[in-house]
Amino acid sequence: MKRILSRKRRQRGVTLIEMLVVVVIMGLFVGLVGVSLFRRADEAKRTAARTQIDSFMTALGAYKLDTGNFPNTDQGLKALLVKPEGVDQWSGPYLPKDVPLDPWGHTYWYKYPGEHGDQPDLISYGADGQPGGEGNNADIESWSNSK
Image 1: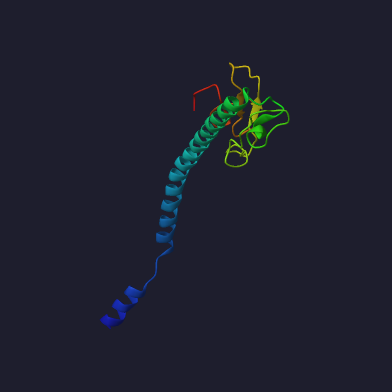
Image 2: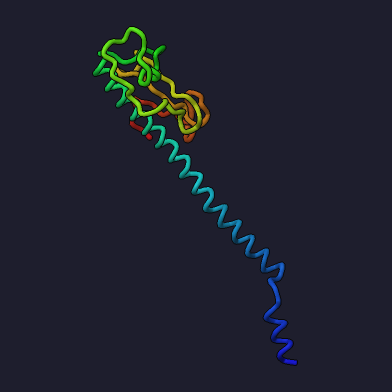
């Protein structure tokens, strides 16, 4: 008789309350860790945009060394890949592949002559794709070193 009782106890499954406790604990863990991961993802996108802008500025510098000037606003960043008409001494392409979208899927805004010194203005408008904003929506600009 003892053998039968002991076998039944060993075969007993998990109770509903035990399962609910495990699910609640897992939910709390995912909630706490998830918020931290999303914050890191936003930070990573801002860093990626800054890195891409720095890369474009380096390529634009090489373009200027070869041609004597930066591409104008109409030529834009495409001039780093395809020789614009009437431009002598172009030795591109200056980028290894097509100009990517920013980390939020928007095109980079390019203007030359720029309004912030003698270099072009290059901007990612952040997550919202609109000028201005704070946090994840903040603009990332070529003339600003803030991340």
